Figure 1 (cartoon, helix red, strand yellow):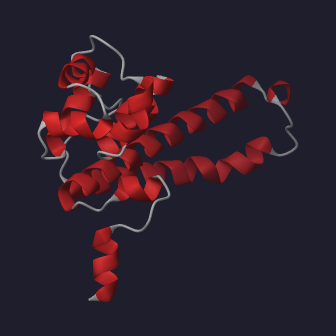
Figure 2 (cartoon, helix red, strand yellow; figure 1 turned 90 degrees about the horizontal axis):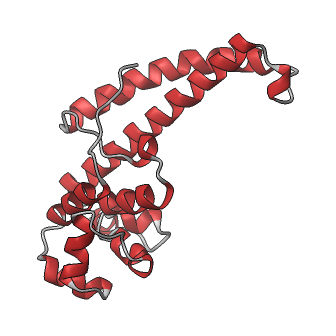
Figure 3 (cartoon, one colour; figure 1 turned 90 degrees about the vertical axis):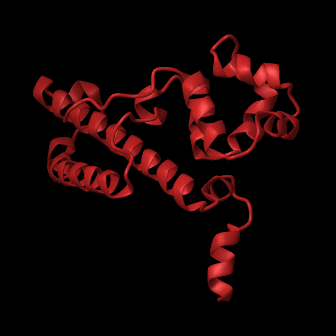
Length: 178
């Protein structure tokens, strides 16, 4: 699998998240209880996202949530924003391609792991195969997260509320009532 380029910094992801929510930075800052200067400093990587602001900031949208998760964990391969063709159909095709690769890798996994209780029970080849499969699963999870970001941005699905365990999205509620 080819390495997918990612947005270089948390600040860039945060700035993108703020642009996607179609609200002025002053209103966003007021909602999370921090100054506009603090928000801009985080966008310019001059300071970290304030710890107390992370949960409120992640409620903006899934891009902001991923930026907060990336800053907290450093897991760029999992939470990074992909610099790829962001057209929804392209992202779905990319995900389906990854699904096919993962399916093939997972088919062999039970045989590799049969009667293997820990790392010492695996040969070097088995360990490499297992590591390769784990890496492809992480890449696939990142593609799924990026598709969710794009779907939420384009269609306003309220996915961040769902991920936080809050009530159902108004979009879904409206659809059921119709």
